[in-house]
Amino acid sequence: AQSVTQPDIHITVSEGASLELRCNYSYGATPYLFWYVQSPGQGLQLLLKYFSGDTLVQGIKGFEAEFKRSQSSFNLRKPSVHWSDAAEYFCAVGLTYGGATNKLIFGTGTLLAVQP
Amino acid sequence: EPEVTQTPSHQVTQMGQEVILRCVPISNHLYFYWYRQILGQKVEFLVSFYNNEISEKSEIFDDQFSVERPDGSNFTLKIRSTKLEDSAMYFCASSESGSEQYFGPGTRLTVT
Image (tube, rainbow over all chains, first blue to last red; front, side, top):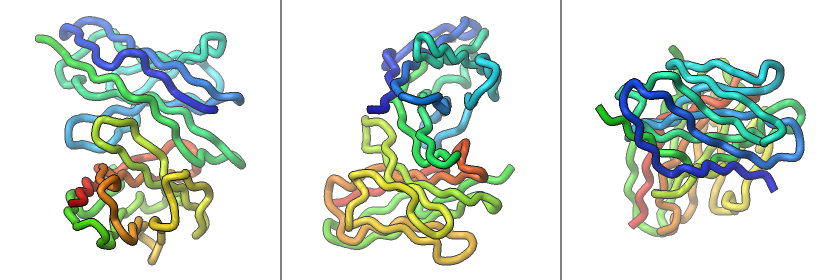
């Protein structure tokens, strides 16, 4: 069955430090992969996506993610974290049919806290 | 920048009552979705909708749930007889081409 695992429930980093949030997926075909961010009281904002091609994808707010097929991973990175990055981050795999993403399967999320 | 909007932001209802959650997708989008997030749990898929019909639905989406696109702009989720366990944040999403999905801010449904 398709699934997404985010091993880290809660991560704390210092402002200016680098960040890596882990995501592993289980999906039989080539996946569509996404990272979303949710600030308190807000909806889910799309950070970046991977469909095919270059395995390193750039997103908004200075985030990037690397797709590693051999490790079934799609880890999110940022070289220097800002206090405004404190939020919950969700990795998702898109299940496709007929070329369209019919549904997203989400991980449990990683809550990021940023220390001054 | 176009956004998905949802109304109301918070709905309180009594068990057994019907509720309708409303969404206005981004205007040129053709694919529509509902998800929910029970407090402390992961976001779960409910239903996808394209070309005026349901594309896929989850096990959660039973006969108590229905979706409708009553006009060219709104997309609604109806729960006919709410249960306590329906209490959750409900998110609407839309997609232009069926690839990436853009989410609304959510409606918090509280069933008492």
